[in-house]
Structures are given as structure tokens and as C-alpha cells.
Length: 362
Image 1 (cartoon, rainbow, N blue to C red):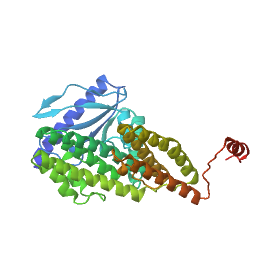
Image 2 (image 1 turned 120 degrees about the vertical axis):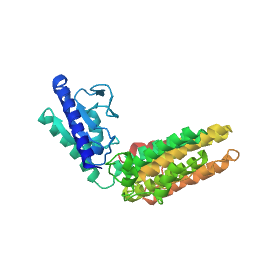
Image 3 (image 1 turned 180 degrees about the horizontal axis):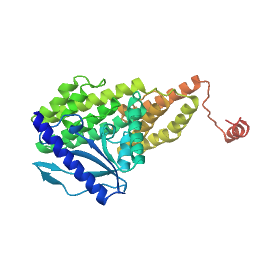
Image 4 (image 1 turned 90 degrees about the vertical axis):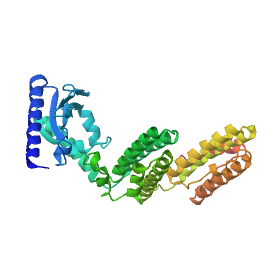
């Protein structure tokens, strides 16, 4: 960009900033905490029509603007205030746009304690991003992947090109944020540089560039849907791979196995048997779903073996389901006994009473 144009833009921005500060000092001396510069002008990536991005932090805990948006020199300006709560959530990496905190250039502050508070929040965000990939960063990634899945459902349910393309753009946006979390970092620039930044990341799906661009370059509804699935599937697979690498799998314990065995036997076995006896296909299906959900939960939280019970569901042959489920219960019992514990079964109340009254307290 020509030096004279840069000089003109710098001078115009200074006048606008001075105007904002004058209004704050005159009318909102107790409401505004600080003002910072963000966006393209902070990293010298602006053009002649770039607007001025100011982060104006207020003390009132709500979102408002200093005045209505206006157009000046063919550029639209909107100076919004944000709350400390917004910055707190960015500091915890709970919101996108974390660079609006970490890269913010403070240009005005009403009290020293406000600057101290801001610097503390910025340091917190930087510390969290300096950590290795961990459970929290993967949890944030999963949230964005789940949002992308919702957008995938939206685009699959529509045959309108515009609606499908819009849903694919939101899917792409959420997958960008998922990859940001999977790499435990933040987008440091605006949407113009999304892809440039992403391509520097360590963890990306295979053939990421082509999959990413395919979503953008697709022409028809079918092409968009195929491209969206390919990218979503790639990011989801990457997430699963990283989870296996960085999140230690729990080790099964005898107490955990005993608790799950009791529920498998007493709740889910009973429910599945009752559903099959009723010959109610809907009941059988949902009973199997409940049992599968419990097995998934035990695998995730207690480190037990992953079982795929639902593959055995057949509405016309429910006996297959119960037979396979009983095998799963037997596997739990065998593993429990290999740990030196015994499954307790009683045939008479007298025997049960004797055990309960005389067994050692655990």
C-alpha cells in the first residue's frame, strides 16, 4: 500500500479514537474501563476500506454501543462495548475470538486497576494455550464438532442450494474452531487469514486443504453434502485419534466392575427380558438403546471393554439380542472374578441374611 494512503488512514484512525475517548471522558467516566485496538490495523493487514476495530470494555455487565453505527469516508463504523464477563470467558477459552483478548493493544484506560485486571485475564488465556493438549482443549473441540454435526443435519435436510450452502459455511466455521481447540491455540487474525493459519497447525485431518476447499468450491447441493461429510468425518476422526493419544484410558477396578455388573444384571437384563416377553418391538428397541448407552458410559468412565450390543438388534429376531447381552454380562462377571472378587448369588433368604449380618464392612 502506498505510504501516503497509510499515513492518511493512520491520521483518520487517530481522529476517530480521540473522538471516542473524548466522548467516554465526558459522558461515561465511570462506565468505561478501557479501550483497545484489535483487528487488521494491529497486524498491518488492512486496506483502504478497513474499519476501525475497537474493544471498549464497560463496567455495567451488558452490551451496548456508544452511538449508532455511521458511515464516514465510505466506511461503516460501529463502536460496541463489551463486558468483563465476555473477557473472562475468552480468558477461559470458552469463546471464539480469544485473540481479541491476547492480541489487544490497549490505547486508553481509566484506572490502573482495570489494566491490571485485563493483563491478568490475558495472562490466563496465554497460560492455558501454552499447555499441552489436554482434556479441557478436547472438550472444547468436541463442543464445536457437535455444533458442526447439527449444521450437517441442517444441510442434509434441505434441497435448497442457498440453505445447503449456508449450513455448509456454518459447518466449516465450527470445524475451524474445533481444529483451533484440537491444537490448543486461537485464531490470531480475521476470516481473511483463516486458511493460512490453519495450514500451520500440527494437527489437521488428512488431505485437509483439498477437503476444506471442496466445501467452498462445490457447485450443487449433492456436491456440497459430500464435501461437508468428508471434512466433518476427517475432523471427527482426528479428534478420536488425539483423544486416544492424550487422554489416558481408565483402568477397570473390581469395585467399578461390581457396580456395573449389578446394573447390567438388575436393571438392563431385567428390562430387555421384559421387553422381549412383551413382544413389543418399540420397547425392545429402546431397552437395547438404554443398555448400549450404559455400556458406552462404562467403557468411557471405567475403562471396561467396548461392546457393540446394537449390532445384534433385529426387530423380528429379538432372541439374538438377549443371547448376546447375556454373553456380555458373563464377560463382566469373568473379568470381575479374575480380579479375585466373587459374584454373590443366594438361593435362600437365610443364606442372604447370614451373609449380610456377618460379612466384613467394605
